[in-house]
Image 1 (cartoon, rainbow, N blue to C red):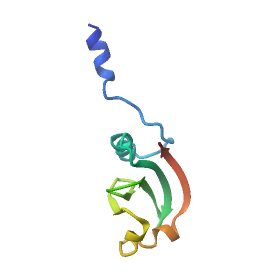
Image 2 (image 1 turned 135 degrees about the vertical axis):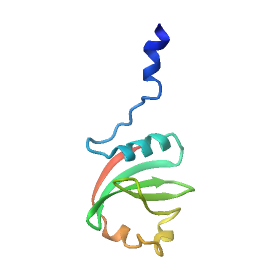
Image 3 (image 1 turned 90 degrees about the horizontal axis):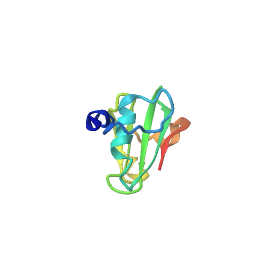
Image 4 (image 1 turned 30 degrees about the vertical axis):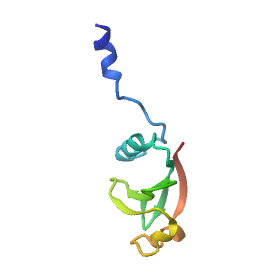
Length: 102
């Protein structure tokens, strides 16, 4: 009986993020937060939409997702983004908001 009571709570660990954070972003954080290299996640306004920047300290590098978790850009270093579709991201982003930090 005790197993039946405890079982529903297995795998239900919550991730502490601001209210209104998209479910897929929460899931992405939850799946990657224990990796040593994920340092933080920030939300920004960029090109008229809210985007989420996952800051990794090593390979596979940082990446940028939209609100539906579609990958926009990725790269290990800021310089690797210079030829990517997001080459203006670092100069054009606004309204920085910390979503999660290790």
